[in-house]
Length: 393
Image 1: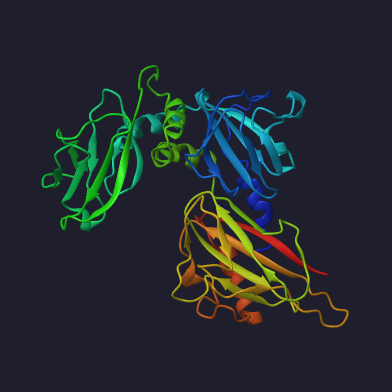
Image 2: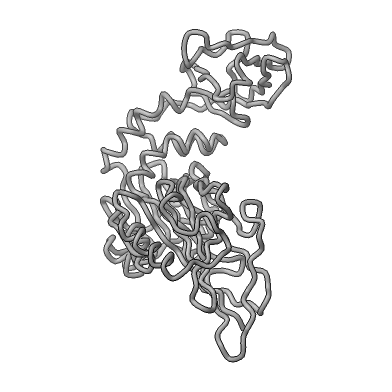
């Protein structure tokens, strides 16, 4: 992304939301299940299934992208509340350029984007290599060879798998990073398998779901992603969707409060910030106080990580920032309104930013100016900003 000043990043964030769309097609979305490709809307994660006719809530300031099995992709910019098939009539659909000017919906035909479909097809083999180090539901393809990758956790090497009523099988990965599914264990829909480490202690369990590969033509990754999501294999669906997200959904950030995007507080009331990125990113937040000073509030200290997980809603204050935020006290007739500015970056900027060592202390005028210069000088770095005004009665 081109370099921006802190004050100019709001417009940049809007521009980013419109990059990468192809084949804009007016019309209504059909009533059918969809899978989340990318979202800054709390409650929606990549690989999550949206059932046919289910209501979708995208708050003001957030956006979400959904993929249907036929390859159609729909992006919704909040506020929106309702089923995906209840979109505006064709007259309400406009091109990508108008989205920046305020249009809230558009859809694309992924089938026309061969550059996106090819990476999805190439990723299918890796998607169906199971990870015994991850608990929960994992999908296998009917009639295919089931492989198990070497766990990242050394405490699970070797790993012992056991299904009820069956002989245990030990996996060692002595000759590679993947081994075949053990013959001792069934490959059947609903098979539950416990996973133990070398000490024999069961760490977790995984459940197999077998999905039909019949009827999915080569390159039809959209239909496969929907089937994976429908079977409960959200992580595998997300892995399949990564190249789609990377092609059409640049880094984005949602910032609001537990009272919405335009909150009002009484002096001294607790403030809770609500944030979500659409991919893993490094997050930095500043509070502008009533005197106009910028105070770094996140990360909450020099040893605290700035890395946040995409599609996971973060609330501040909370476990990641134990210091409470409160609305400012009024001083005479002066305004007590405050502003929170947060920005997400594709890489760690901690070493470049002033105030990283002194969280919750106002920056000097020189440090604030240096922050602006640093942001303006960034090149070849994804960077988006969001802000919210904390109004005080």
